[in-house]
Length: 305
Image 1: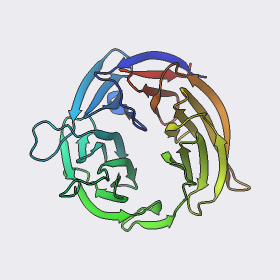
Image 2: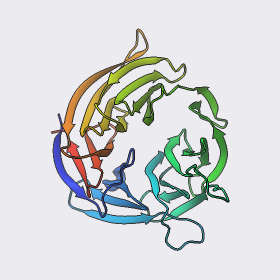
Image 3: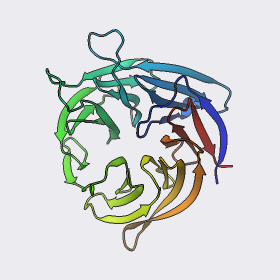
Image 4: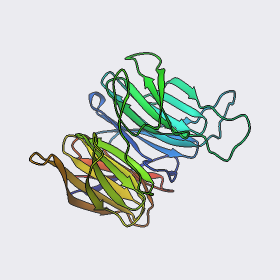
């Protein structure tokens, strides 16, 4: 179903972080942007669709009144909104929002840190574009920061919502439901047609109805911790990647009679001797996907023939 394509080289190797790969397809320019985090640096690669042109950029973590920050970056993710595409970078010190090509930082939000050191780590991670003009970012305190994104100019910190699991977005964010974790860490979450798709440290994928929280399906997908999930929204393909060095492609389909979701396994790829830490589809149909691995200085790509 998929075959391996030429890898993309990056300036530094990938850190062992969940979902450590960002992909943004820029159709008007026939380019695809990729991001991979290494310590306090975001490695960016811009690749033309014909495979002839590549360019590299590196973004450093920021903190107030410091020329060169050593603050570790926790995540870098593209947020595609109807009026604007942005790159969001989170770290132990704050949240940086860039234009999608990384050329300009349009906003910086510092995290509140205690005056005296504590045992509790302070950081931000968990990035999502929501509705037409919001970007939500999770904070280690349990809060979710909501940024109102204008079509041009500087984002605005709109409000802060705590202990939010499932919500309905809009002018006011409304809590819909909370799903228990069953004493197992959830490393990756996606939403597809009213269904929450969650990957866990147990190697399982669980599918819940978003509004009610009812469990529709549970799949023993991997032998070890799941590091990344992604969904191709137009085709219903689901990508899962885990510490067992396997990347798997699944197909999600709705059953109208029962309003439930069915899961079918389609494809396997074994990335030998690699601790996978990121996997993303490169387009909305799932025609191609990319993979990163801990301590690898390349982005591995697979395409359908």
